[in-house]
Image 1 (cartoon, rainbow, N blue to C red):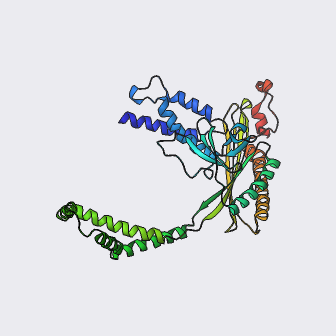
Image 2: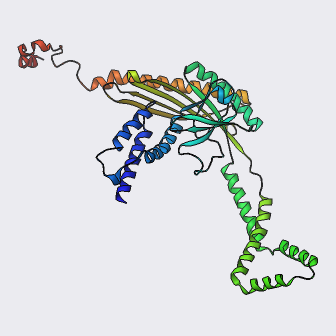
Image 3: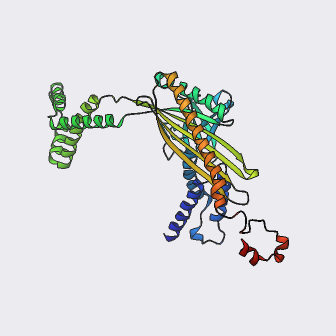
Length: 391
């Protein structure tokens, strides 16, 4: 038990490091962690095999890929179209997921909204398989989604040479309406449970009319039920549950559906041969009914030549929308996205210019107290005491 607990602890720590992988370096981090975990000198009871490591890594990589907005491509053979990329995210998960017993670890089904397709994505191998057609969504929601998609695509093509964007329509029931529905169903069930079982009496009366002379076997079965209290209670509970469930299901009102639109775009730049990589992530949620745009930006840059320096920054913000109509809302959202990202980019550049000019220079003196550069070839000839006294 202690050895198993120790191996699980090591796996959890390794997966936490895997989730923190810099952009474009999950494979390197995975192989390094594998070399650390597979220590030849470790105890036999504490060893971690490949199957256990891959199962744990599948969960970690699914979290990493979803958070970092990695992309997947449906090629022409699979989609019947030219190569098209889509962002892997939580909003893009297909609603009908296979059970855990049927799905392989780290394999989930996602939606390609532009092509109206669904596909299986392997979070470990980052491969696409089993592409299927997607049923068309609500026409009004799809019209707004396509307008937002067109506006976002134009913006991303202009600003991010290798950027990928996706727009998803997410439908859900409002919380207060879902609670009202649950209360109405509960009240209907309670009222039906307290009322006499009229339907049951009617059914039994009809049966008596049809069967004027019941058989001896039915009489014996009824007598056995009367003599057996457990069977009698179970029969009564079954009748009450069936009579209460039918009116409750029939009286359940239809919950109105609320649609929000999730916009993602991501730009990746990998240059590992020159020891740097970076990723820009942007996520927006458009609530048309509330006329609110929620933004969340994130940038992660890694320099690792003779060192290890990372920039990991994020910025959330909320905007109000004033337009109406699918095209007008899409144009306003694209304008706000451009203004927001340009402003944050300028602030980042200004902050790091000040960091180089002020913060780093404040860490050390640029010149010694003599206000002159030190000639290290003549350092033994300096009369440091006299010069320090004159300074």
